[in-house]
Length: 358
Image (cartoon, rainbow, N blue to C red; front, side, top):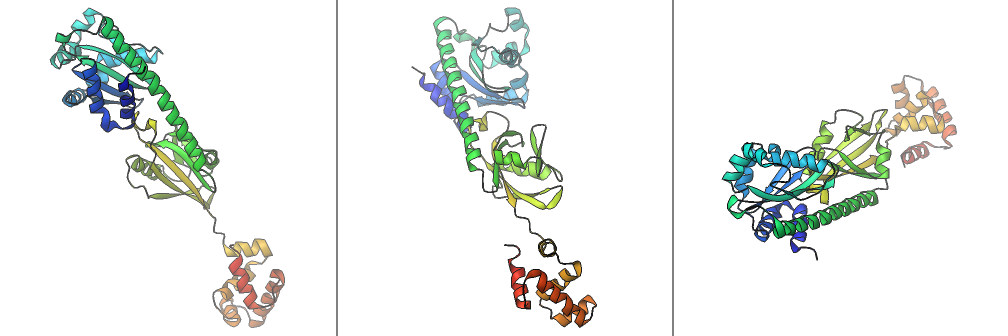
C-alpha cells in the first residue's frame, strides 16, 4: 500500500505553496529535524524547506550552498549517471571526506543536518526532484529498519511522481492539439519561450512567421524581444490579454496575432520557468482593391484610378479633371470598364466594388 504522504508530495509538486507543510509532515514521519526539496533543472536549483526550516534555506542560498554543497554536486553526478538509489551520509563519501569538508563540519553540524537520507528523482530530461530528509547528530544516522522505511517511501514517491508528471505532460499536449484549428494554432512553451510541444497547425507557422532558435520560439521578422517579453509576462501570470502582431518577412501583408496565457501543467513548477500556452491566429490579408480590379477584371492602371475616384464620390467630370484627361476620354474609359466588369451603370459598378473583399 502506497504511503499516504506520497499523495501530499504530488500535491506540493503542483502547488509550491504546499511545500512547507508537506515537508514538515515528512520530517515528523521520519523523526527528522528538516526536510528539503530541490527542483533541479538545467537552469537552476530551487530549494524548498519544511515548515520552521525556512531560515536554513535562506542561509543556504545566501552562500550558494544549495548548488555547490558536496551532497548536491556528487549526488547530481550520481543521478545523471542513470542510477537511482537512496543516498545517505556514507553512500557517496567516506569518513575522511566528511571530516575535511567545510559544509559538513560547519553548516551541517551547526544546523542539525549532519545525518540525511534522500534521493534524486528524475522526471524529465536533465531535471530532478531531490528529497533530503535531515537531522542532527544526536538522533543518529538512518540505518537498518529505519533506513529501509525511508527507502520505501522515496521509491514510492519516485514511481508516483514520474507517472503523474508524464500523464500531465501527455494531457497538456493533447489540450494544445485539440485547441488548434480554424486559423488558430497553439504551442506549449515555457516562460523563456522554449518549445515543449507544437500542434500540427503551429508547425505550419514555422518558416512562415516563426522559427525555433536554440530551442526558443522566435519571430522571423524583427527582434525577438517583444515576443519573449509577452511570453515571460504570461509565465508570471501578467498581461494575459496582451497581443503581438508578427509578419511574414516575404509578405508584410501576411501576418498573425500572437497571444500568451499561463498553462497549468505538472511541469509548471519543476523547472525554472512556468508553462505558457502560445496562441497564433492568422489575420486575413486585406487585398488592395486596385490589385483586385487588375487581377480579376484586367483593368489598366488608368482605369483603376478612375474607378477609385468614382468610388470616392467624385462625378465623372471631377474625376476627369483630377486625372488630367478630357471628359470624353473619361467617358470612353468608363465604357471600357463597364464592359470588363459586366455592368452597365455607374451605380452597379460601385456596388460591385463593395463586394470585392467578401
